[in-house]
Amino acid sequence: MEQTDRISSFSSDKAETCNIIDATNRELNLMSDQDSSASASQTEGELEGIDEEMDGEMEEEGDRDEKQRDSPTPSLCSLSSSLRAVVRIKQKYQAIKKRRLEMALSGAGPLPGAPSRASPKIFTFDGLTPSAFPALSCSVPQKKKKRRKKRVLYPNGVGRRAMPKQEQSRAKYCLYLLFAIVFLQVYNAIENLDDHVLRYDLEGLEKTLRREVFGQQGAVEALLSHLKDYLSTYVHNKPLVVSLHGPSGVGKSHLGRLLAGHFRSVVGETLVLQYYVLHHCPQEADAQKCALDLATLISEMVERAEDEEKIPLFIFDEVEHMHVEILDALRQLVSSKQSNEYLNAIYLFLSNLGNEHITKHMLHNSSISMGMSASCRHSNLVKELIPVLRSTLEKLHSLWTDVDILPLGLLDKSHVMECFLDEMTREGFYPDHTNIERLAGEIKYYPPVGGHEYSQTGCKQVVAKVNLL
Image 1 (cartoon, one colour):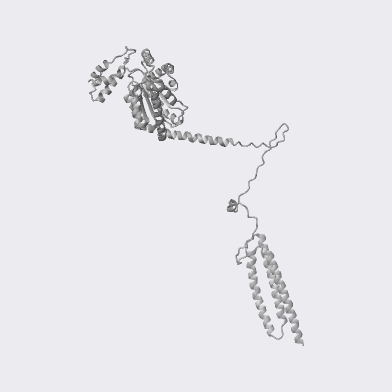
Image 2 (cartoon, rainbow, N blue to C red):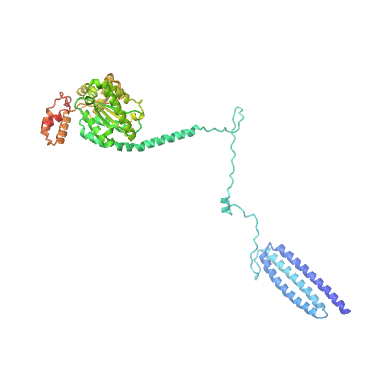
């Protein structure tokens, strides 16, 4: 009976001891959870040491309990040893906690021998700034702050508080389109300028005229200027009509033949017409029929040139013998009211109409133009003679109203000698200077004026005299 009471009291003491140990463990766990956020690395190291000691002591206590269980009568000293172990654990934990707090306040490092562990990283929103994540800030567009526009206050009691919106006119876009079209047209014209000049080989024509035509440098330069301006483009508002006037033998027909030969080599034989009035229409009774035939022929050539995108050349020699019906037909053809294909053509008239005015001017003004160059003399001749020639020609027919008139001056004795030299070289004769002076002396000249001896017949008799050699 006594032994049974002892066993029951021992069981109750053991149960109470276990409750105390459980309470102590809960208190230790609670305190460790509260202090883990401050210094987790130190606490974990220290708690591991404490756990090891507690495990050792608990193993010893367990061995003792097993021994007491094996023994039939448990002793009081075994119970008191369990309590003392619990008290020692609690005192040691308090001492460690106190020492840890003192080290935290003093700023010292962790305890020597304690294992170093990194504290757990706790996520917060404090570091989430655009500068910390450049990739995120670049990918996410930030809204720009809209600046408030300043209000504009209008005087005189007007109720508007903001500038009125100006309505954009649609005509502005049409103006831009017009500028673009004009720019393209100008650019296209500039690009095609060299193409047309190269197609008609005006440089070769210039060399030929300067080499073959004597004493008419001013007229040649003026004629080439007209041709370059007209042939630089294919779009025209009127045809080119040039009329060469001068006395007999100054080189009008020779100049026409040179132009015809050059254009035949450039545009073709079918687009060049040389019309001699005394040869193609000698009878006045056939004038109406000749006019119709000429108009038909010119129309066919113009249409053919339009298809080939070329400019034809029409040369009319001996115009002073041309009948009125033919002049009327030509007046209609050269009019700017014709269709486009008739505007792309060159008409060259050769005649001695007005030669008396040219001869009179050359004989009376030779002393004044003595020191001038050939181009200056021709420009002076054109300036003074064109008004007189135009008024005279317009009285004859209205064809010369819109015609560019180029007068050809008289040929000097030096020019006649150049004609003899060229003809003799062409015929195969030795160009003897003495023989050339003898032949040139057989030509009739006007009385010397200002150091010049002008030929009355020009170079017209040169071919006949060379053939007599």
